[in-house]
Image 1 (cartoon, rainbow, N blue to C red):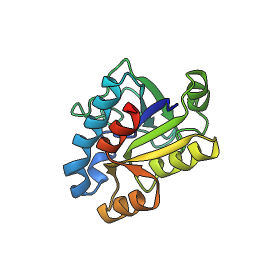
Image 2: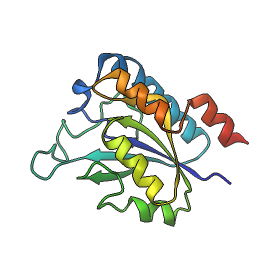
Image 3: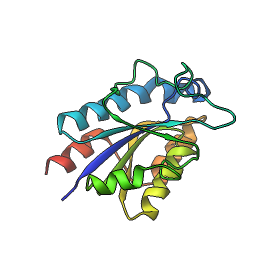
Image 4: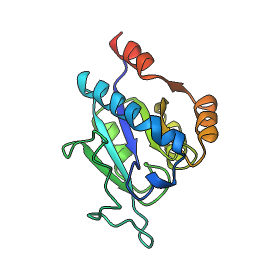
Amino acid sequence: SLRPVLLVVDVQNIWMPRMSEDDRATAPDKINEVIALFRELDHPVIRVYHSDPERGPEKGTEAFEFPPSIAVKDKDMMIVKTQPSSFTHTKLDSVLSDTDRNIVFLCGLSATGCVLATYFGAMDRDFMVLMVKDALLSGNASYTEMIEDICYSMTTEEIREALQD
C-alpha cells in the first residue's frame, strides 16, 4: 500500500525572487493545493529549508522563512539541510523509515537544483518518488517543465486518485 509523504522544499523568502515569474505566478497555489490534499488524507507534510553554514540564510531570519502565503504549519516536521539533497546529512531517511513511508512527493524549488537532488536521493534510498506537476519552481520556467517531463510527475488530481484507491 502507498504510505506517502510530501516534502515542501526550500520555498524560502531568500530564493523566491530568483525563480521565474511564470513559476512564481502558478506554483504557490499548486503547492498549497497539494499540502491541503495531504492534510485532508492525513498524510505527513515535511518542510525542508536550505541554510548554508557560510552563506545562510540563518535560521530565525526573515530570509530563511517560507512566505506566509505557503500553507505549511509550525507543527509540520522541519528538516534543515546544508546540501542540495534533503537526505544528505539530515535525519530525513530515518524519519521516513521510522514512520514507514514508502513514497515521496516533491514540490518547491529549485526544480533543477535541490528538488532534483532530493528526487535522486530518494531513489537512491529505494523510495518511490514523484514530482508534483505545476508545484515546482526554477529560475527558468522551461527548465521546470523539462524536469517535470523527464522525472516521474503527477498532478494533484492524479495524486488524489492514486491515494484514494
